[in-house]
Length: 387
Picture: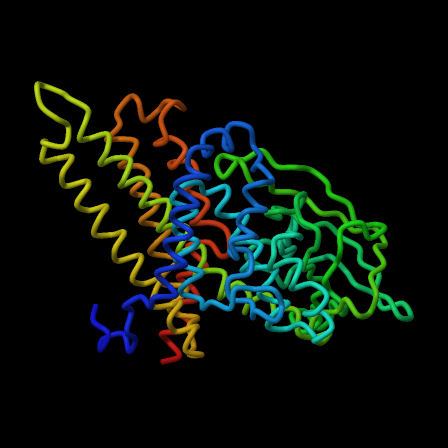
């Protein structure tokens, strides 16, 4: 795909290459050696998160005046791919923090909210989460039951949120609640709620198939009183904020999927070159070569879709369609690559001693969170029918 065909020159700038190199060095030297331990113990070492903050990864496109790195969306996608190539658990903590907590405050917060929260979040001193899903509402976010009632100079929140990445780890949550159920989508508001708020507690921690190092928690609000200044945007803008946040977040999940798929390819290549069967290397068999060729081609295609979506976002263009296409395709590529990776490893691919089974478990979630593949197809269909 040429620059003329995309409308963008996707040759990386010096700044983007530096961001990519810094992320790759950190991921290779610090994260990858601990990936199996992170998965096994179900916890990410705090020092890794602190170092990501020190390197500027936790606030990549936050302006420097708010403590961020002042990079662009494509640089962020490059960083996400590198971290997830090493460890998808560490990668999803980064993605959820930046795309789902930092981003809505940056784009919808008041000046006072930006001054208060962005520096801590961008430096990684605080971790953020995004509380939208509920026990009875996932893809249908408008069906949420969490309520927000105005009481003087405060709001009273009641309800339960489910499947919240970083839910236990986070210091601050972007919480969505119904202020007027009769208005449905137009009655949803967004709030910035700090951990430690009376009535706000962490409930059940989920036991997951993959990305086990990141916590997925239930958040409970029982007459949780938050100041009126915690309202993010206007009272009727919560649904719009949620959707616009998820549109951008899909670029990071596409980049995560590319990172996982790349891990599958690189680990498969290394194994196939050293493993012998029937007197020759596994890599010498055409069946294996074709699997590797498909992986390499599909990963490149997924990466280009992801870069295009990021470039559109950087240019201030409409990127909803591009982001949905990137996430749909890249997540499918990751799942297929992980399946082939296990197959290439053979019996060893089924053992926890080797990385293939971890990639297999980690890849699946990319087809589910921040919009399932089925929802992505609905978004894509809606966008192309508009045209």
